[in-house]
Amino acid sequence: MNVNEAVALSNAHILDLFSNEQLKHLGLEEVERDEARQEWVITRGFSRPWGEPRNPVSSPPDFPRRIFKIVRIADPSQQVLSVKERQTVS
Image (tube, rainbow, N blue to C red):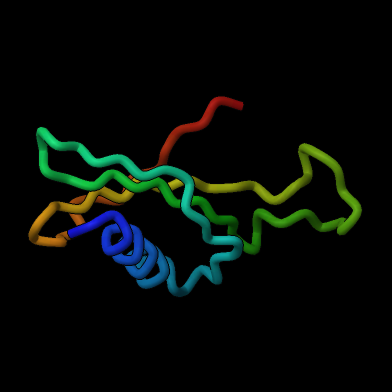
């Protein structure tokens, strides 16, 4: 599997897994190939409707809260092994 296929698979998996949460602003954050484990490690970022500011002219820290998920995909089986939250420093 190449990097584009791995990223597309992570995107489809996140959208399916969180389909009932109306994700917004889904984006690619990081991609890494773990050669030792033969896995792709892909970080996706998004926001959820309840993380949006109530006031459209808000300034930080009221900007939308962004969530980051790390998706691990086995290569070459293309099996999603895990989806974990990436902890961020505030």
